[in-house]
Image 1 (cartoon, rainbow, N blue to C red):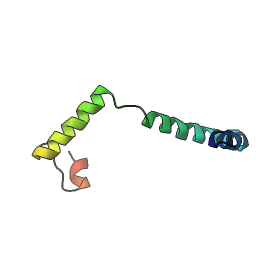
Image 2: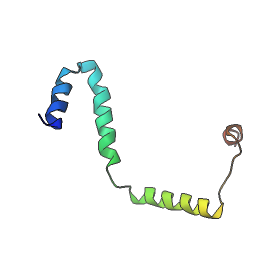
Image 3: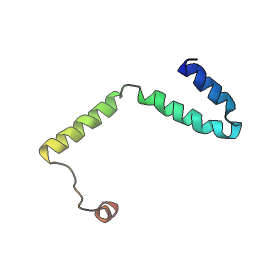
Length: 68
């Protein structure tokens, strides 16, 4: 029996009131496989630049962050 067949067999045993959890998990697995879009890539580059140059806003603790 293949892993796909095992998964289908297990899905058939899950009660309907619990299947939403499985759907959410599978959806996250699938979306994690997608390539980041242009906006996300720009954000990654911005963070890399901030780390490289030490620029950007800095906080010493969470209280300081929440009080901005």
